[in-house]
Length: 128
Image (cartoon, rainbow, N blue to C red; front, side, top):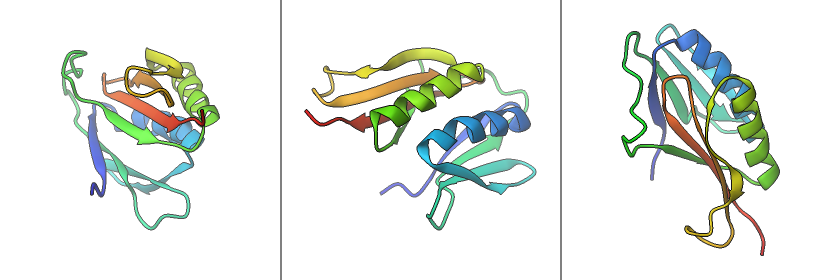
């Protein structure tokens, strides 16, 4: 089982503000702001699960890297709220909210790229 995920970001302050805004839609909050990392955890949980690590000067993640992080949420509304907040905050669209029938008939997801090109997916499974 995975305990936590970390991604590199070139501007920790800007990325922390971005993720604080967009992860709120998924019931995450900033828990561990530190000088070189920021940890986010779901409200009511004991620890941070999603971490940003400062990597000043890092190259943007290539679109064809094949790597992405997927966060599960409870509803299609939360997927939409995450996506809309991310786009409003300056993320790049990498797949608007909708059913991904090539995964399964009830797989509802959205994909964005953050300021550094990290691909973040948010998914829920809708009732049929």
